Image 1 (cartoon, helix red, strand yellow):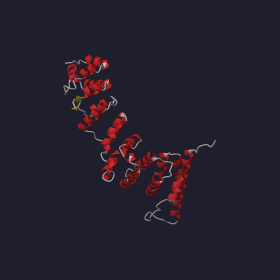
Image 2: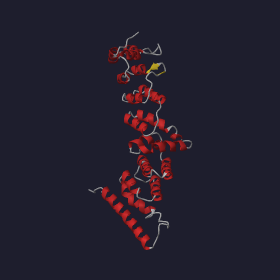
Image 3: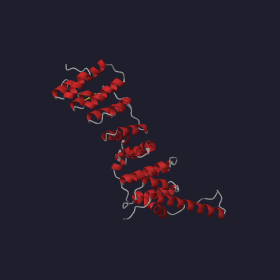
Image 4: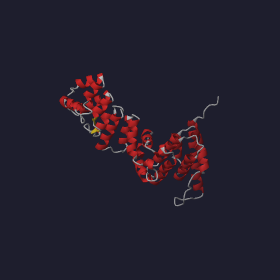
Length: 305
């Protein structure tokens, strides 16, 4: 049985090769009397040699090792090799891997703004999905959170030619909710995506309307969501009641309790309705025979009127 290559040994050998090449260049420069005023060589080896050096890690899809190695290359060399890998249609790397490589290289040179932009522009060569809101989701989950502000600015600069980049930040928030991933939503906000109270209220409604995890509610309320919002003849409570979503209603009550809301005001909140044709939450529960929901609402002071 053929054993897989030892990637750690390959990485060590690659670094040793880089080190030996560096020593060779330094020795040559000294022996030829080159001073600091002379132009140093642009790279230690050709692009093809660099690609050959990292080839084992491309085959094994070791993105972090590729990035770690290419950070040692001159800027121009690292960009050209990355571009070659991204454009290689025969590569073992898929679109997700290539996206991760681009983000890793863009983050590797935080002070080189033009170089960072060149790397980010390589994202435009990927498929439409890889340039959509999943881009920010992957960035925060793959350790590239510091890139989020740059990615948002980059998306705005390119959205005219690439419509999938329009409203990238907002779309990423909704995608996190669609995926029922509260931690990702928090990471997006912590990484620089501003969420104002109006937007958090819209996100809260989206959570309730689509029966997403009740775990979103404490976070969204902490960001300023309005618990009294209503749409399409429904309050948040009646919308949740219609779907028999007891977990959502419990989370809404818990959010009110955290705010120090009195029991009477919580009961009033649960009794509230905006459309007589829809009715209150307890009326919906009785009509649809949602026994557990009805019992909970009564325990919280709700009454049919």
